[in-house]
Image (tube, rainbow, N blue to C red; front, side, top):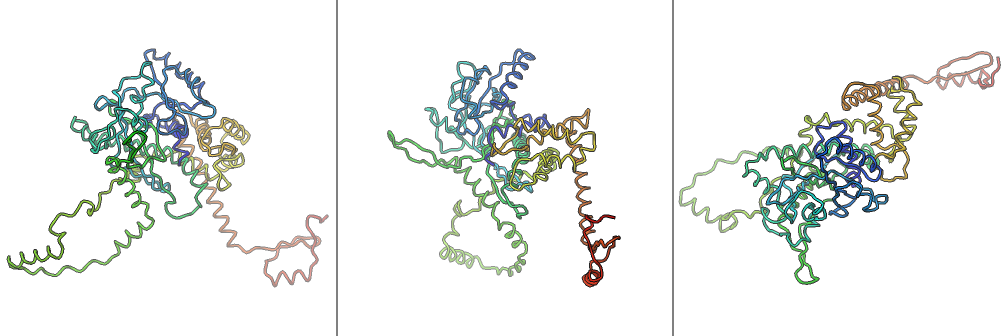
Length: 533
């Protein structure tokens, strides 16, 4: 999971989905991976500037694997990236900077939303009903050469802004430099904003992002988790960082596989002396997320539900006996003496907390099922991996895919398949835990599928071409599986026969012990391979 949440791998997965479904995945900024795509980055930027001379972009560079704002910087001139940092030893992602965010109190902010990925197969996703809004500590201005270095204005990272003299710690979720998302939504609602639409767009963003990263997760999962293990084998709490634009459109900034769950912050009480101070805002949001996560991943949860439903109904209570007014009063006073807690409202901690994690998938699976094309590609990829534990497809596995899917019967030779494999694999596309592991990654296999689909089906959108090719491959593989199953059944239901080759003739006899023994006593056998007529 940590590998897929890295900035480079996330950008690859999102780009694949943007190529297949450009309209549905327009919530992720244009991105390039450095250093391998630096030349492409320069070419595309220059081309866009020629087509639109008024376009004055700013770019943000994020080191792969970085966290807490480490190593992030802004540039106006793309060529300046070459002069900063060692990209060869530490790859990075460069994105178009979103320069028109929605502001509150003239401050830029982002939303940290917690998402529980409870299961991969079947896919189950829960989203927290509340999150954290992290504010910058200097009034926002659109990026210019004079303010590119002002991180407290442009970067919302808590770990950076906490060092600002303007950072405000607050015990209330409505004020301060860190607030609850629900309080911000309340403020938007007071301003006439349709917060249902905002929430709907955010939920859609989360589901689409999870759909984008799940195929790679399944490949890594099958290499680590024993096959056929019942039930969810793992879960993960993800931290989605989301930016609201001026038009309230949510933009995905990044996904964190290891979001901070601290509910306190350090405060300097004297020079060189710090104390951990509880943060009510963090506690309100994070404790609920952890509590509900433990509820949902409880391995005995389903058994408890089943046991609860199977419990026999309780007998109806006896008819109440009407008491006189005086008896009622004395009865209630006696109860108060024996149980003083009845005379006062129960403390808040005694009440069962409301569920804060809301299921969004498979609840909304029907609306998003058409986006799961890459998962179908991943299923083919895993089928032909061959060796358990690997995440790369070898040349033999790719040839088997071409042959068994009948692609080689459609004007595409096996030799052409070998050339395609070598060409794509040499580019080194796709995430890999071990770069020394040779072979084709899932992302490279997706590229091969797209190439084959475009070659086979003309005049259609890319996702339609890929869907048709997947239907073709899955049908042929299903037919092949049926033939193999029928063959195995026929072999298991037929008695084996003994083939004998006596001198001068060929004879078949049933492989029954008595017949075979009698036949061997009366005949002399020779090896058929050495028999000369």
